[in-house]
Image 1: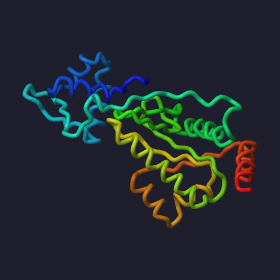
Image 2: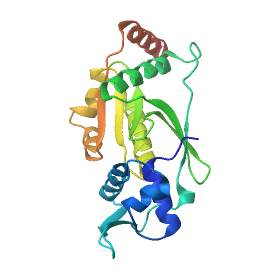
Image 3: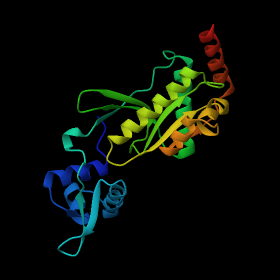
Image 4: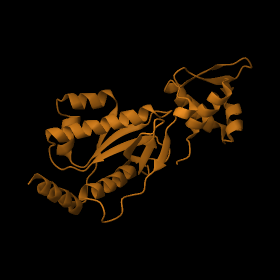
Length: 227
């Protein structure tokens, strides 16, 4: 299971004490240095409406959880998944691994598959997340314009990202990573409700370019699939 983020630890401590705490006290209790790390995390939690910051009785700014913040028991467990073994995955999965690497280089992140275990026992996986879970990614290596069912698949991926993000204490950036401009058009510049919905929910579409050999493998796999 992955370690809790600083923001998650702050929420846990505030839930445990049930008292407003200032940044210095949180840094001391959580043994986090420098103190600015706590300050930045608390500001992000305030922006995401998980806590409020105000001047307390001793003249210092304190942090207090807002109603509706997930209790400790409801926080999702996270597990970094291993990469699929070489040769054991289809061309699509191999391509998606390359896409995550290319996107990670572009954004300055290391992206790995990650599984989230929910309080009710259900599990949900995303294709890629960084170590701090500030970025969630679903990848799709399809080449060419998507068919109707494939459009629904991408929208299901978007719903997955939104759902996982709703379980986290700090909202991450959400990205759909594609590898072909024609495949992305319906979700970016086309006059479609899907493109409008993605923009409305702040889900970004990033297109990376696959190596020619891998792109040809995808095209060959698609041709076999459509026979």
